[in-house]
Amino acid sequence: MSEETRPTHETVGDDSVLAATGRSREDWFALLDAENAESWSHTDIAAWLVDSHGVDGWWAQGVTIAYEQARGLREPGQRRDGSWEASASKTLYVSPNNLWPYLGDAHHRREWIGKDWPEIGQTEPVSVRLRGENGSKVTLRIDELAPSSDGRHRVRLAAQHAGLASGDAIAPAKALWKDAFARLADRLSET
Image (cartoon, helix red, strand yellow):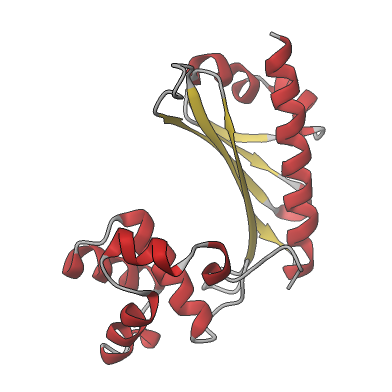
């Protein structure tokens, strides 16, 4: 496990979990233990939180991952199936339509990512899927956010880099995306 990959409980505070879900992380863990959820799949745990307790999907994923990490079912950066992935995101002050060419066009994408990875597919104007090095796969996704307080467009650009060789590959992947997002932000500020 890399130093940059921290357990979920270190990246999302207990107060935030309580405010968003109505229960503390430890309360959720106790409920899940009472249901013998250690034997459930990741999908089943998250679905139970949503369906039985009305937890928002994003928070259900976070509680599920924290539970799996706390119970030794996965390490930080590891998926439940044992594979490894890194993720990164950046908020950019641009409309989705103005950002899309930087994702959808291979030439523009290569300039800011610094890699010439083959495209697997795209869903315009939301996501692009790429084949990375060593069989890894990358999904780049644009999520539109509410305008900033000064009325500017905002989006969250997220990279999910799956199929990494090991936990040791997480920190370099995160660094790649941090640098790539910084280059993209610089390009956008020039336009």
